[in-house]
Image 1 (cartoon, rainbow, N blue to C red):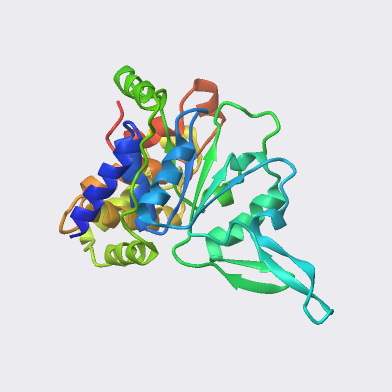
Image 2 (tube, rainbow, N blue to C red; image 1 turned 60 degrees about the vertical axis):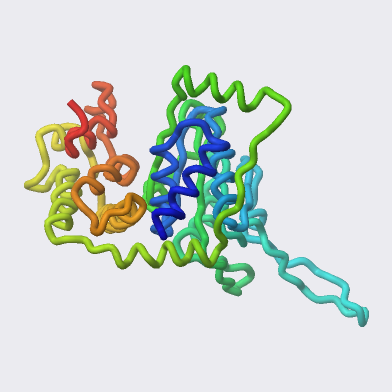
Length: 317
């Protein structure tokens, strides 16, 4: 039944989004793990459309925040305003912000100052917000998909490593092929527009998230996860020569947790009876690329974290 639901979700997504099958699979993996995603790509690659389409298919409440330099924390979490009641008295009433939703799209998250980023961080990590000393819990499921433009740095506030670590995946979205772009032109420049149908609801998504915990994680797979994460740390005996030469800081324990959860979720999506090393390697790059910090040697020689991690998982040269 789960595989049929997943196939239906993929089919509906493909009606609107051309290509990007791997990105869609990774987004679904992150969502089943209750993990937040950072989508990195140049403008015009349908990042916003992809997230909004997924929200519609899954029947989730969807909100979008356009992050700007003048955005305040209250613009995200909400605020208390003074209201006149029927009897003539005045009292403060809480007006929820857009964070009170199921699927939140934080567009260009690096365009807002650290104070506002910190307000979103509490919501991402604790699934709650605090306004005027009162804590309000967010409704489950609550997932943040944030976008970031990798080529524009003027007027931006780079996310600190501590906040980057809160993102389950970092997904780098590339350009479509010529054939895919031809289909994009055909779909988007005519009179008619295709819309995805709603297939699930919040309760259905919660059931899928709960099913992830039942997927077995064999001990050899756990050992593979540990070896991979420890290999990213320059002071570890498992580190390769490249890691010792080009990495300043390796991935922390949260990376091991994310790899384990992602391997389970991907196995569920693919209809496997248990997680395997294959699933670990499939999710390793989006889990590790924003948790491994390259040093000045790597920057000077033009070596990227993606290249280093790909070598570790046997995908690179």
